[in-house]
Length: 151
Image 1 (tube, rainbow, N blue to C red):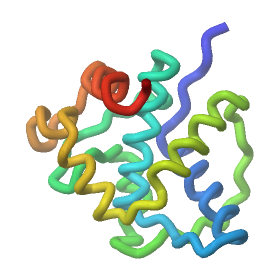
Image 2 (cartoon, rainbow, N blue to C red):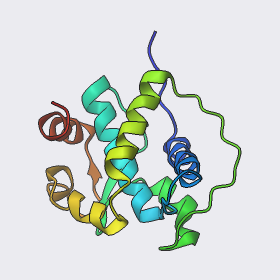
Image 3 (cartoon, helix red, strand yellow):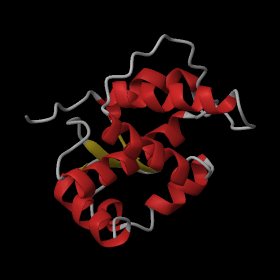
């Protein structure tokens, strides 16, 4: 059975909800829109490399400050550089394998600041090789992540 793709905003809400749960147990900070964009990029890359399918189908574009999913950016831009307070009920539709990979992405990348993640993406060829405001191809993301993140 083919797995379904998710909306990028749903994936964003998973990260915000998971971070809220982590914050209740540690000193984690709220996630800003900039940081959320980078977590979405890294999650998409890991899904493409590990599962050979996208986590979500919305395009990731190369903006000045790194990869961005524009629909999610628009949803949270009112927060500007501030952390996003997430107080919605969240129903998890991810299966165990998907959620495990999302947790791994969070645990690997959320420890960095938004600007640290921004700087990391600026060193990676999917962003470097894409024209400003152009769509970063899923193929370039998958290839890069298979070579650099998924052993």
